[in-house]
Image: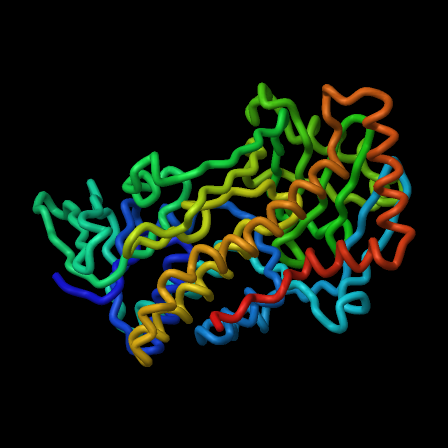
Length: 394
């Protein structure tokens, strides 16, 4: 097999890159070790930055997002009962976010790829990357008991933190940065109307809570819990009771509860690897960086990586700009580190840390008061939440 760009991973970042390249006439093949149904079954967040929504439209897959997604012009913070609304649209000159589930993003991209005739190979086993430092890299994989060789010009590693792409790079060529948080998020999905039409991020002495949503009839709620907690130990009744305790009383009074569709515990971590490219291999999304979900940046960072790599590859094929290839990592990392900082900031501002003493708690309180009572502070939160601008290649 031959193609121009081999894309490892059929999650939203791999499929979005494939769709953009397909539209530009740049042949590509997507390899995925799981089934399509498995990929669609992943439960993930779905707050899309302005730039991510614009990229979806550019890829020709924004129609359903625009018709069914929920545009949010603000977000609410609560701190020990106090409530403050961040007016995203007013503070950023018109930018907003769209609540549209990652599953729906993936579904739209899968449908577009099928319609375009693009090649996606699911259940590709034992994927291996070869000669990525050369001008003639290739990928091998097993399918139906046979070993297949895929020759290509470039490889995009969109296969997540545990994928093969980053592991292909020699360890001594990478610098890894990591911060583990001493808690996780217990999430519950339910077919109940959201308690608020905008997201609510709440700090409480018992721990953080988040009121999110997937639609006007489906809600997603989260509780900060110790890493030792297991989802099966939390009955629906226990979850709803704890959530009500952590929310401001006027919000808790309007909370509609119901049977859970899914419950799970996710650890929180920050992780960045540098550089994000090695020869003709480019790392995209979770293959290169992980952020706590507090800032709603995971999917959006992956999308900005995709946008940067797409424009570079288009410049290479349309204008011969081989010199652009070496710019990918530096451009992507500048935005990555800013998003990591914002996610770290929001996590520290809104969570309870078991090792914090009285001084640390006072600093947290005064940080919250400053940022929510200062126009500069409010604008800082708003600008980061809706997403910083995507950097031009030149």
